Image (cartoon, rainbow, N blue to C red):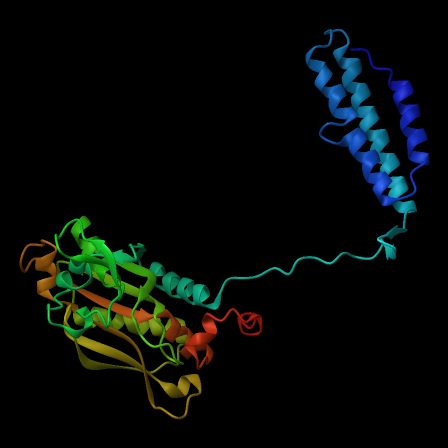
Length: 337
């Protein structure tokens, strides 16, 4: 195909002189520089052009593009205002951009906690939110008559567990089932953390929600001591709450750990005067019955586990007094973090 670039240049200059509005300028740009514009058509013709003409056509296309871009720049500078919908608009004023969001405070807190443990050698593994009764209860040494297995305390689904006839699937009530899943799939040594959402049929108030977030930690090897658990959690609290944090470990009971403890921090470091100590997490040495449930050789391995609520950690660190604020999507609250 033959192109008369001199004639095309003259035509473009004539058309540019008649442009007097942003709409006309945009139409001019699309005619010559759009995906289906004249410059694109010239370049497309190179595929069928005679080899002796390809260089001239390519140069002509580039020259035409440069001319049109120059004409558009000149006309853009000359068009400062235009009539749009009957109103005078000053196109020289800066535009109004979209307001950008940012990471939710709960996600920020979870990422911060995960980062601390990953720096200490832990690996993050996500596990399913729909669980079996074995993983959620039985494998964790929670007896059949334990109150947490009642329908008033657990969301059971209308779906049968394919691995246990007559038993139903459920929404996990804690992240501890991740321990069972991971130990059934992997052999020690291991150091993992399991973050995610959990569900309980709690009445929603300032400190409870039917859905919230937890982070589970598990370390298993042949030689593990409770003192190592204390050292790990002490270092975590110092990094998360600051070097001045004061902690204590209180004896407690969990079916899946023995011995077990709850960890408190001194409230003064957070500026809270009404209490001296604030509970932040539970922990303990993995109960041998859990190792037995996942098929580990009796007496060969030891380990420790811990778990914490992400909402609680965020509320304590940032002075938030109502868990419902995290889920109301009020920008006045969210933009503070």
